[in-house]
Length: 387
Image 1 (cartoon, rainbow, N blue to C red):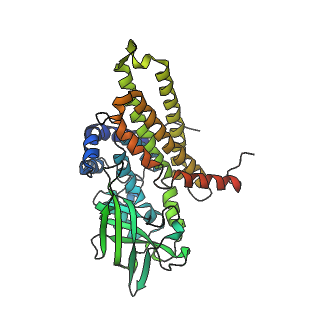
Image 2 (cartoon, rainbow, N blue to C red):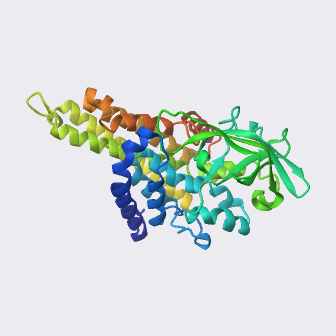
């Protein structure tokens, strides 16, 4: 078992660290306060070749793998969780096509995302179907050489400024197995960003409601060329990135701990630096233990995905990584804020932002409750067996 990073992984980590410190860190507070999409982040990631980390070389990606993406996200999320989400979206919005699309679709849809020429989004969640994917109501009706898509998607990260989206719809509204994925250019008639959400955190990446009102797309835009990918398409996409959501939490926690530790070294209390108090030292020790455990699970999950282990029989371990890491991020953000006391609650320090941002992570790409359901099923059917 080798825990050392390869030279390629180290290079990507160092590149992401440089961009994080030079571009993300100076702007993180302003991006949060204004709630505006940080185009400068995007352009910096594009210039550093960080947008196509998991995407095929043939279409402009680097195909460096999931662990490489995890390392990059960990670095940028130390300063801004929105930056971590921006990198994750380049994979979330394309993996359905990467796994199930035709060569032409990979070239025309994934290529521009990998090269930073277009932004994309993954459209799954609906007003009445979040975790219950089988209950999606968006409909795709065949009409000659086209499909006509009607429905509404909500809480779509990056949706309001996407140039293209992959949208899940049923060709038979009564049959979950008819679920298919379609490639939609957002300039088409009938597509509309109906509203943009007012969010608690992660304000740099907008989420919103996307409406498809009789949007007509060519039949060639159905992913894979045939109807009925079924549940395997969204589940494979989500499974392939669950540990990566955990990487956002690991980076956020590292950034929060570091900031609180530097504060504790300087702040005087009871006759000396705050860090000299044993109660404070114990807090930092617990935070470090939590971070190291979560990072190991996240790296292991990323390694599993890079080795093709993200099918239903492996999903429980990816859920373990996602659930533990995201909940860890919330614990560490809370404890780091507590170290600063009243100052931590103020917007003069980044910890109140980390605290708000962390809360999103236990919800997106499968709630903590859904992850536990997956894990408990694996225990029940003995896929996860400790005998």
